[in-house]
Length: 189
Image 1 (cartoon, one colour):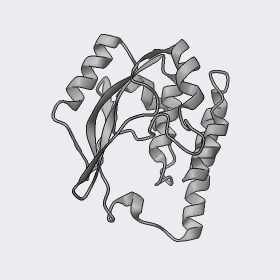
Image 2 (cartoon, helix red, strand yellow):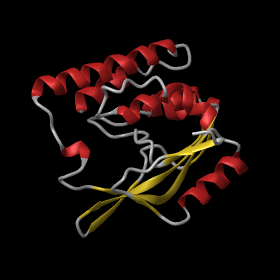
Image 3 (cartoon, rainbow, N blue to C red):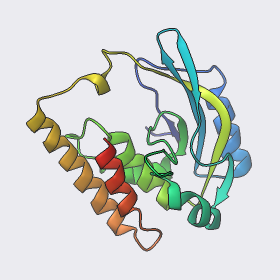
């Protein structure tokens, strides 16, 4: 990508026609590094609205430290997302995301979005969470995340994911220590 902004979409999903336009307006008007929206989880003929576990609005660095980071990955007693790890419900300033995304190990096939998303948001100066669902996340039995490799391969992949992100989060502990939330996330997976 060579543009100033980056967005993602999985091959079996789709976006509301105005998703990128709305997120772009937020990036420009609110002067944030990342803008994100809710998603529709489409399973057959059921369409469920799902929102991030952090209230909608603009968060500068102080608000990120006080209100977002404490529950960014895990936001609840059992396991509730704070900010969903997917890349596809967000629009990023390329400069903010690129350094983290390029460091994601190609061996990671499950959780690779989290390896780029969480370090990016940890290093962002500001974000905006929109209270609208604009992305359609299709759930099918044939999707990549539903396909399982053998147990040894899966363990190796999760180990690489865990260690890769943990190393990155340890580099930025001076901003906020997310290592315990990361451990809960990987145990949840």
